Amino acid sequence: MAVKKIIKCSNCGVFNTDNDYCSNCNTLISHQKKRELKEKAIKQAQIEEAIHKIENPNLAERLKKHPFIIYKIIGWILYSTIMVVSAIGAGLAWFIAMVAAG
Image (cartoon, rainbow, N blue to C red; front, side, top):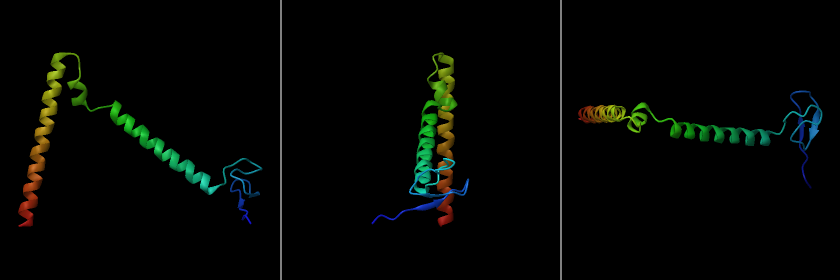
């Protein structure tokens, strides 16, 4: 024997039996359906964020791929500078951690 779900519509107050949408005002009342729609929206947002990261590289990456040679050189210098500063920062963080560890 199947159990019938009775859900009260939060919009109009009508009680509905085994419906995803209210029979009176057509508002979504199914909690499972709401959860599915929310999960789908979250996945879509993650996909859009990944596409944005792929299509919009940082300034150094854009300059490295520029057709004008001077901009390419500036891009490579900027990229190299960022890498050197990052390496120095990582080495300094490692040194501080080792000194703190004793």
